[in-house]
Image (tube, rainbow, N blue to C red; front, side, top):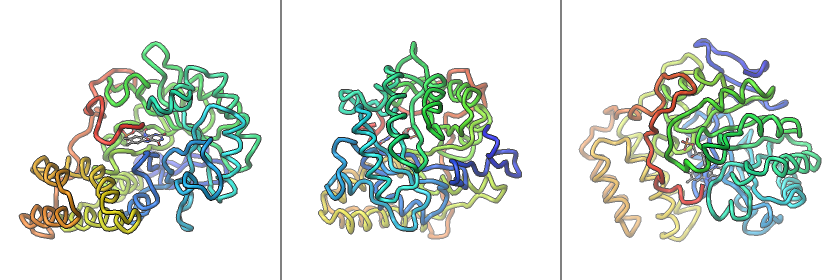
Length: 372
Ligand SMILES: Cc1cc2nc3c(=O)[nH]c(=O)nc-3n(C[C@H](O)[C@H](O)[C@H](O)COP(=O)(O)O)c2cc1C
């Protein structure tokens, strides 16, 4: 654990430092392409919980101030600290992109070395960089030289089972100037399946002197605690869990601070689901675009609801916003508004030693994970 990381009343980290930036609580909203747009991040921040938010990945080659791609790097004036993630394979192109996002006012520049998608790997960005550690380190060095804001890297535990080199690569990135490293326990080959193995996160914690953030199937308090205890990492990063239970980051943060964890009523869930819909409609304007974004969230959101499977199908089949609203009102009408709905079902993060593999609870290709 990093010396500047603050330990809370439960003996778990409550905040960590990336240079002069305090990430408090030590809970990060993961970058997710097509999901963590400004609207989604705003809603999660309104519910509470993240100590740091991150944009979805942005192709370095397409990033030019004012163009369509640069819209992906937008954030709210009060969204601080915020990290903007870039990907690419050319050190000079990555440096140029980093300069642009620094000029846009980002607090942190994050480099993607974790995306398994063919589109990204074909250009040797994302997790393909884990196979080319020297190039990966050169990218970090070039970006470091180009910007003065903090620089972080997000990676997987390795490219495949025979190349689980995250600790080594994390160290190389640190030596070239990376100031925190987030590690998803899966390899690129695992995509979204695989056997849960957080040993490489634990090794990286021992190997580097910058904060390490643990990622992968952190969806609730027990899975967050397991990640922190099994690896000694400085903070956790939550991705799909934020779609499944948008309060999960808040609940984890509350637990870390030693507070009681909020329970969520049926009416709060109903309002949150409809808020995603209406905000996406306002942002993306076209009904189809808004519905597409909404359905991606709804697939995960309904996983936690009693009889959620039937509700999920109805939502996914809906062709209009009015239909979605109708199904949502119908579903929640069977609950009294103040009734507490169950929290996330138990996660895959059992209290096992860091190295022991365990079958992950997720399928190998979860809904919505087409890209990353
Ligand atoms: C729909 C989707 C899009 C993603 N896009 C990105 C991305 O843009 N950049 C990135 O570094 N990781 C991306 N990821 C990976 C997540 O950040 C995270 O590492 C992964 O989902 C594991 O965490 P989780 O189990 O909490 O979801 C994406 C994941 C999903 C499901």
